[in-house]
Image 1 (cartoon, rainbow, N blue to C red):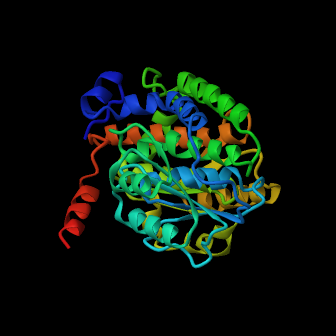
Image 2: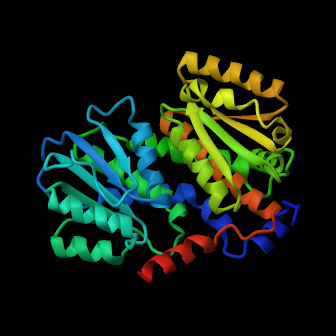
Image 3: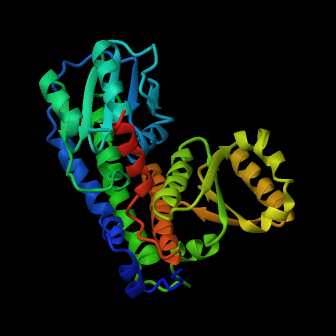
Length: 355
């Protein structure tokens, strides 16, 4: 265990430099915009009736961000599938965006083959691998992104690029201003509240990490726009902090999970609930979160509320994600664990490759 969150201790534990990757995230978002601007879409424009993303893990969270951000804008459905098979409704009027950072994720390679068979319009975003080979052979649109990152650290590429491409295809309005604003807001948030040089008293992510240390974390958000933030936070605690966590969304959790916060009571002292909040959420969802917070506190459960920051919806979504990312890094340091390696994922893939 290593409880110090000094910059010196962070660098000592963070042997694979996850900190540098988090600090450079706004720059990655800017670079993603440039990559999208120069992308050459090879298929002719169609009247798409739906957009389907295929990806897993860190390669899929960017797709979730796109779906969440466009919830109130897109006139056609956008869905994300983390599976070997694509749903039956995928056809020639479907835009399928294959998101595989490594290019070798077996579920996504399978989904690519199905998209091809169904005559869907396909865009592949990857750093290489089998997916790149297949796309180039099939003359599908392929967007090359830089290699050498943990897939979960390629979020800028895997969210900003598809957003820009959907705008280029005329499926959504131009997103350039929203992206520029989000980058500026992320830089400001990093400088004022997340940077490792900021003391724990003033550093939002260090404070949250200190409250999550040796606790089981449950993360709640609204289902509209911000479910991706809860999903991402959970995944980052799993992969970076090597810690179990769960997530759920409002209003659905008020129809089932809220009842479960009665037993076993002896464990509640070991739980922390993190509520990811935004002042633009539906008023009734805000009210639900207020009531639920009090119910949980009455049960003796610690509740931490994190509010989104920045101007515009994209900024606010990304701000909660960025806070969660830094929190997961600092929590890993408190556990004395290098946040980057995911040995069990690597082992699982090796075992699967044997058969």
